[in-house]
Image 1 (cartoon, one colour):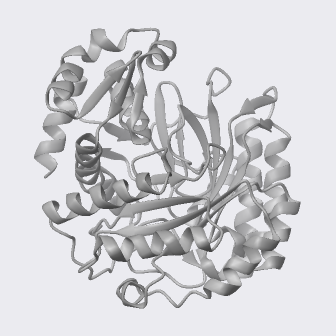
Image 2 (cartoon, one colour):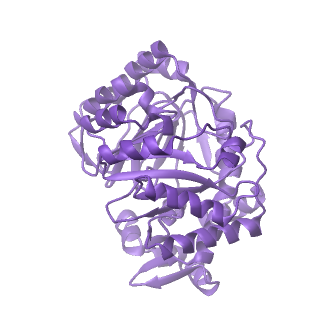
Length: 416
C-alpha cells in the first residue's frame, strides 16, 4: 500500500525525496500574503472516547479545559500580535467536542475577531447529545452560522458496531426547527460491515427529515492506532456502495460539493479542509501557508507549557518544494470533485497544463475526469478512485505521522 503512494508521490513531485517534517520550526507565521485564508480551532475534550475516532482528544475535565482555553487564547496572540487585521473565509471549531467549552467559545471568537474579519461564517462540530434548544441558541448568539452533527448512523446495529448511543431524533429535530442555522450538516460513516445502500438511504432520508440541509458520508478507515475492531469493506463492495448513494443523492436533487458531501442548496456548506491556506490553533491543529505546512503537538500538557513560555507549540514543519506544494494543492482541491486551472494559475503563477498536462491527459483517457471551460471535473469513476487513493494516503502518511505524534510531543523528524 505505502509503495503505491510513494511511487505516486515520486512521480507527481518529479523527485524521489520524501516529504520531510522536522523540528526546525518558524518562530513567526507569515500569513498576510495568503489569499482565501481560513481558520481552524481544535478543542480536544470529549466525555467519552469513541474507539474508531483517530483525532486528538482527551477526557473532559473542567479545570483542564479552562487552562487549555487560556493557552489557546495566548497562542492566538503569539501568532497574530502586531499584524494588520485580515479578511479570512471562515472559522471552524473541531475536536473533540467543542461545546464542552461552550462558555469559552465566545472568548475564542472575540480573540480571533480582533485580528480577522470572518467573511463566510463560523462552524462548530456537535455530538448528537449536544443538539438541544439552549445549546443551539447560545451558539447562535455568539455568531455561529454552521453546525455539523456527528451522527455516524441512526440505526442501532451500526451504533453498536461503533460504540455509540441511541439518538433522540425527535428531540434533535424539534431543536433544529426552533433555532435556524445557515448550514445544518450531519455526518455519516459508510462501508461498515454488512452495510447496504438501503441502510444509507434510510439515514440520508432521516437526516433531511430531521432538519439537515447538508450531509457528509465519510468512509470508515481502519487506523492502526485506534482500538476499533471494525473490519474494512472490500474494494468492489465499497465502490458499488459509493456509486449507489451518490446516484441516490443526485436523484433527490442534491448538489455534490465534495467527494463525501451533498447539499440541498448552494448556501449550505461545511468543509474545514478545502481552503488554499489556513491557520490552525490548539493541540494537533495544522497550518498550511504558501510554502510550508506545520502541525502543533498532540500533547495537551506540552501544548500549554510551550505557549506559557511564549513559544509557538509547533511540533513539526515541512518546507515544500514547488512540486510538493502543487501536489498538496491539487490533492485537496480535488476533494471538491473539480479543479479550476485558472485558480491554479492564480495561486502558483504557472500553468497547470505545463506541469501536469500528461497526467490530465491520462485521467481523461481513462474516464476519471472531464474538462469544460478549463475546469476538470471528476466522473463517478474518478470520485471512487480519488477516494481509493485518499484511503492509501491516509494509512500511509497520516496514520504514520499521527502514530508517532501521539507518543512523542516533539519528535525530531518524520519522513513520509
